[in-house]
Image (cartoon, rainbow, N blue to C red; front, side, top):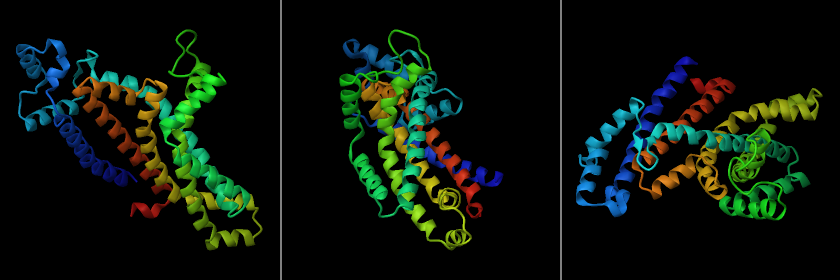
Length: 315
């Protein structure tokens, strides 16, 4: 197992390196002079030249990349000019909000998606299967930002069941109940599409397992149907379901950008949008690379979990 994990870690290095190159080149190819955009009305030739020198924009592109990469490897992601604080500190602080939102959404979509797919497969062509299929297709078809605005209109504005936006109340205690009330709507919106995808693929994996010989043998031995479905079949199907969870974790993490904007959630996605509008290059680059690294590490954890369920993968 240790050798398998080491191999996966080594294979993640080229992925992270490629992501850093792509992010750096995209930011470098943005039209216009970053220093002029940053300075605005103070963009005199002297000030522009000084800022380009401070940001290292006067150096060749390749040299700038290796300087930035070397600093990142030492834990220095640079300093955000718009916030006047280290990039890594800002990203870590904002990532707490994104982790709460994305983690809750991932837990919701994983539990609901696997349960819905299992029930749908166990009741194939039945009323429950048709109802779940209809709900899944409806959830997949609705864009997250539109669903978010509709849920705000219905549950926050009209019914007043939940807050409209934010992570904490402006006035009042910042306790667990306040966090849950602010988290409910954005977490449900973010989990909707992923729940549908997981449910559909879980259904397919369960149907394939339910046709296997060991399931017929368990039924022939008189094992209760509930045990056959939830203990034997689901455990075997998880080998195929876990990679789907890894992919949907990336979808939830990236989709948090839209939800954070709609609900004004203080996370990395909202931070990146603000940084792009302000042309805060180092903050954008550091934020994207950090999120990408987290996604790669999560996929590594998914691969390890899958190898524990299916030892053949390690070979």
